[in-house]
Length: 105
Length: 242
Image (cartoon, rainbow over all chains, first blue to last red; front, side):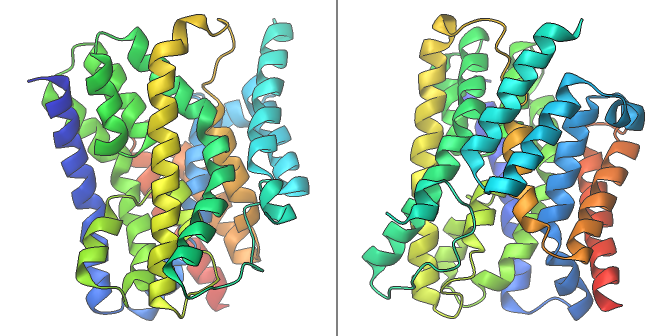
């Protein structure tokens, strides 16, 4: 199978995941309890993605032991908190990661 | 251009809600520009990964529209390069993107007053950056404004995203080695998470989401993202009630 066909199939599977909740919940509202939970989708999902990347397969220990990865993301969080600036956050986190990685060992 | 947009601010509650389609579309496009800039390193990383892989560049690049999801795109290209079967690639992408079930469910109430054709189109572009911008408080009670604004957001992000991925497939070999872009995605997510931590339930949702995702990180694929998301949302809802 050509790679683009595989990607199209993967895209179709992704589209089903994206469309199903919209199709179901657009017609009638979810129970209030579910609606309330969905309000917290952003913090819950983003934090899970970030923590998984920060731990980098090392579990909780990797989150509390200082490493270039964890320190860079924490610095990024400070920049995001102080400036609310997407680009500044990414630039500071990446620059910190490169600098710390270079001097770490 | 307002100051906050020029600074790349994500929250712009003061944005006016013009009724003309053009105004709403332009507002969406303008609000998406800082996001596009923030996505550049991740898009470059994906493009460079495609360029380094055995996957033909055009095939790999097409994933920017077919998947429209950075983490899944990166995983799919890496797997294709390692000779994985189509089934393995589709399975890995489906598990990574299972979290979009929750994001789409959260977006659904905003789409309730939209025509069916728009829901069918809008669904394909649900991903963290577009979701964050689409759920902008302005114009929520105006279905037409919301629709054109969403269009401006997703078209701008798609053009920037696919353009920089294409660029990455070409310029990859000329970029300095050793400047790893692997933290580009997580760093952008941090920039999107911090402004969302506006209440105690939201902070709790993030803490529980992070904790459960790390605790279950050993599960196959990216199931931990789904479990973390569900646990975080449940925690947020419970704290909200009390």
